[in-house]
Length: 89
Image (cartoon, rainbow, N blue to C red; front, side):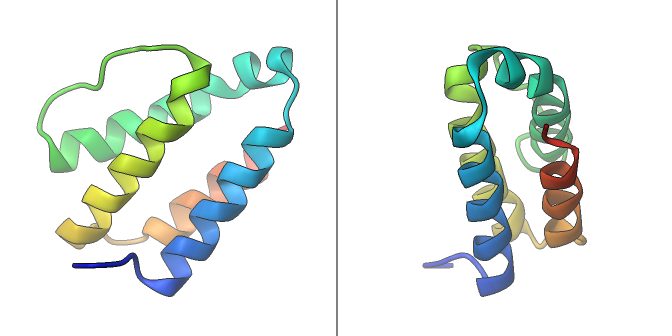
């Protein structure tokens, strides 16, 4: 796969844009929800946990794991990203 499906790419960019708008305190508070999705996707694709590197790197970890999940055909990826975006403060 050379690019993400359009709907996955669009929703991922919405999450990333929202994340970048958060203050440091809000990002720290919301990192648990992002981390949960990252770990869920890693469990399906990498079969191992992702190291905790803090909220600054977390959104990049999400980008990588979404790419892996899309390549692996993980279902409901768009819905999971949209749900995450809605939970961000």
